[in-house]
Amino acid sequence: MSSSDFNGCLPVDLLVQILARLPVKSLFRFRSVCKILCRLPFEKHFIELYFRTAPKDPILLLEYPESGAFLSVDRFRDVSPFALGFLNDKVNIRASCHGLICCSSVRNRGVYYVCNPVTREFRVLPRTRDRPLTRCQPEYEATLVGLAFDPFSWNFNVVLAGFYRLFGHRPRDDFVCQVFDSQTNSWSRSVSSMNDEFTHMNRCQVVFSCGLLHWLTQSWSHLLVFDPKSGVWSKMSLPDEVLMTRSGSRLYLLELEGSVSVVQITGMLMNIWVLTNHCTELWTLFDTVHLRCIKVLAASIFPIGVSRDVIFMATQKKIMIYNLKDKVWKELYSVNGPVTYPLWFSAYGFRSTLFPCRHRRAL
Image 1 (cartoon, rainbow, N blue to C red):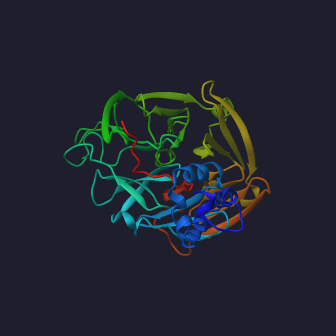
Image 2: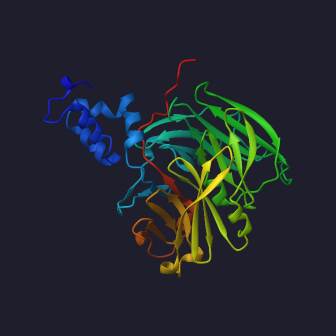
């Protein structure tokens, strides 16, 4: 957009810098001002600028499994419907990365979508085989689902991994991994030996950082790491302080503005650790939060999203936020009456971006 495209009282470059710092809802309201601003969120230079400069506060997505409805909750207590109706399918959220979401179809087993709910752009992934996935290799709902989006090349990978399981038998140690490459629009498949187990929270909390996908195992002894480019699995150690005190603690894996973060809750204390060096596996204690003010909820609270300013927490019926700078707790959302599933069961951290998911770089 050149200076001749927009006749306003502000220089064009300054106007673009201001727009790049707005929340995404406010940004899209400005699209109705003129044709230039209408197409601005879809221009490559602005998409990259918005990713670098826009507010990095996460929002929390709530999924209601019974109805398939979604809600978004931000730090300013703005609760609004989160629409995925443009997919024309009932879906479950399985992973998110840099503003893109990977969803699995409820009606059509083995069908996966990658979408950007802000721009309402989506891409249907080709099936991994001619027939739908069954309980045989791997299960139709894979044990692990990961989304890895590269903000520089705009290419992404979707990883589905699960244990080989013959019908009527316990799963074997054969861990089947299928990786989708958006650049080639195809799947690759590998089999490795694995004996790690994962809880529901472990499966939902996957972090993409430094080109690698990370999951926390049920044993809380290490992180399981996967390189979608080379197809290699590896293990990463947790902080020594966490390993020595993990008995009687609860551990959760989160992303802290592009870095891997582990949250440890022990009694009335919550420690937030950040992986500061991947090569040396160096962890740093980022912050310590006292839970005395919410003592009644401390045993049932789950961290969902974190930034350098706030941390989102979910309980059975409440969504809460803690300001790491002001040391203040706030209740953002609550449910009245009985609930079938606790809110933490289907809550996900998410950050809005403008990245496309249909982009395919020329080979």
